[in-house]
Image (cartoon, rainbow, N blue to C red):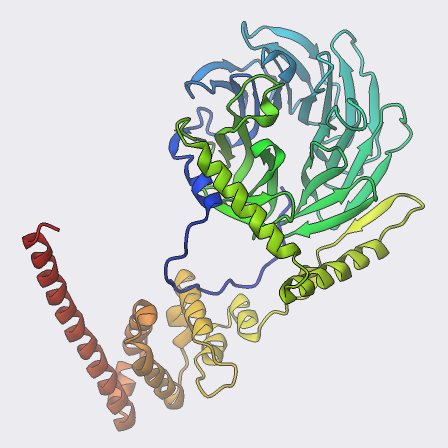
Length: 540
């Protein structure tokens, strides 16, 4: 996976008052019934595919088949020559047939009922096969793509590929058929580590129909049901590509690390993005705003939302049933939404979202007008990058060039901890910020560099540190890091402080502040005990 560039150190966010829970957050929190399927191979779970009542998980040298009704493992396919990749269930028959590639370059087709191998194309790719996909309307057609930078179109009745598409300059790790309702059931879109997203028509084998360029490797592509928009994830951003206008509509950056997977939910009205930062972001597909966030304990490699209905015809308007996430740890997390949840909650969140969109589109709002002008400037900049001659578009993230690294963060990143500490604790500076001080102290603790930041201190520096500690040791947000800083300071310079009357006076002032905080804390505990006794006495 391609890694995102170094980001500025995130500021520590202090706890604030409770925010009202939105209807959208309530909806995604309703996926409460959770099952975690651990990896049987010890390898990461790299791919997910669902069809009918089956869920296929690719992990190591196996493909595991789960029932979406019981959420239990029912079968395991292990007839691979090497590491299995890109298992995909066929939607047209409810998952009775499965295709998968492996690192030897072989593509196999299995009967999921008997686990028999129906078709084998031995070493058809020179390098590992990472993707296999079935056409939505033609049950005998599938594609494969891999690290040899080619995409091959297959028919189950043939021994050789019906089409071999070349044009990418690096690994092809994602490819999909375009929706059948759009520009053609065999039209495909692919993304590569060379940073390009290409639209293919097998009837035009010489070159791609359309090409979009990104600055980073493309990890996943996802066409919307309308077939006029394709989403592509590259680095920590997702670009919205308009195929009709041949230009990007928007670049979305909501993750800290690489976005590895994309999935649609709620009949195409929501987009879910999974990232190596362990977060799943939920976005509405009108204004591309984040409406909910889910946190997982490991980097996310694949995700899929499974609707309640198993039939292809009813799936479009079927409510979401399961949220499945595959992680680098090898675990597969399956969250299920109880079927008894009232439809009124769905209507509430849709009404709230409609109200939000109306307020955004209201021209009387000054903030909305400013946002529209900003978006217009961004669209104009992207249009300037469009080259109509070779249909090649450069997608760049404007925010990547606006963040200027701060001096204390630069010192921290280069292990100059003392300089960084002096800069953020200088209360006489116009740029002094308690948040910066708290952020740096947490970073020093995390790097076990608290003592290193205090070494080679003279009397003036020790005095300023003691003064800062006396002023902040009683503040709740600073207590833990201030105490740790004070302990390290006294441990290193206790003898030196004892020899200086001025430093000894400041140290005694700090000790009095600490004793005062201890007394107040004990009094608060006594009051808490009395209040609890009163509540128990009244039966509360």
